[in-house]
Length: 254
Image 1 (cartoon, rainbow, N blue to C red):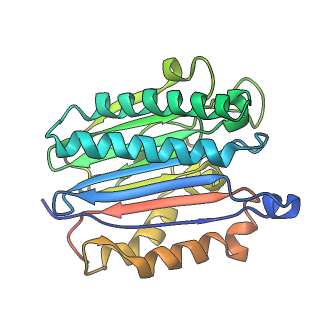
Image 2 (image 1 turned 60 degrees about the vertical axis):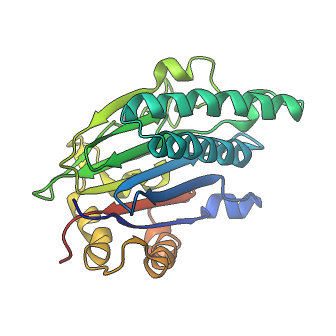
């Protein structure tokens, strides 16, 4: 199995800039075991939560740390490993809120995470945003459809009392060649909502440079380019929200 190569970037939404808010998205991506195992985590802080960026930071760092420790210990129960990471992340988020004398809702964030190893993997999602994968034939498909709440523009968050009950967890097969995780600011570009499917042209476009990349691990050049694209007028015309995207491939170089 080929090694992973990946890029990741984000941009602050124009709506946040107008209000003087920081980017509330957070992400972390790493490749372990000679770049053969990918760990990627994304969290989107709730726009109405004052300290959402703090919750998002806690979430991605905790889940990534739990996943890394598990992989290095030789564990292969990847869905359970991600669930354990989410449980600990929620606990740490609640503790951080208490330390600040705030309700947990003030640190609200969504959570998306994947582990893809040489022999299988796992995925977890709480809230909106989307995880999309492609196998050998380069056919893109979503793992979980974005979770939406009862009312328009609402979703579920890690800080919610029932967040762990709502968590969707799934094993991933070992034929996955490409992975993308993104916050909900990019859903309109990445998903065909009427057809309930992934929008292939979007993924073919953003993955093409990575498919041709020579070096394994993170491409700093492509990460910078991805951040520039997410902050470009073309993308901002489609969304005013924060936007974060991780893309990864272990496909043979084109």
